[in-house]
Image (cartoon, rainbow, N blue to C red; front, side):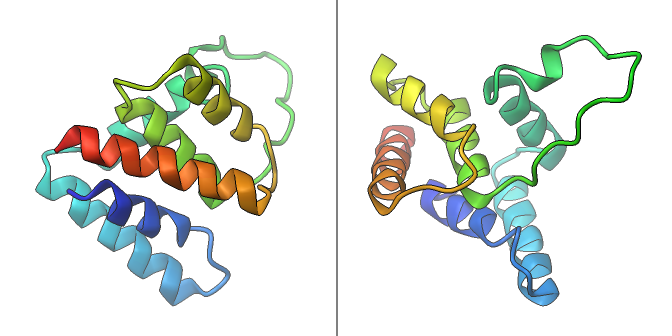
Amino acid sequence: MTFVRAVASAALLSSDKDGEALNATRALARLLGKNGLDTAKVIEAGLRVGAGGLMDKPRQKTAPEPMSPLRPHHLSARMTLAYGDNLTNWERNFLSDICELSRLSPKQQERLNLIAAKVERDRR
């Protein structure tokens, strides 16, 4: 699986065009399946790693605060964190920090793309 292709497909998941989002979902599922990965397990791993371990927090008895919608960079950053065994501390902190942002600057997006490409190269 090319990590870059997976991230590109993931970026289209939040498209406002239903057909584009559906095609991206199916393409991502195919890429993961070809590599023996389960979509639900990848998402769960991303939630455990990103945003302070959302899956590890105990369930609240009161109504939880509504989550802001996930942006393409959230999934890209979480997948990069999940598969980035050789990331520096700075890169891990950067990826964790951008998971909290609703939008990225062009420079932040470029840095995310460079880190994702590094992880892709390391996985080969």
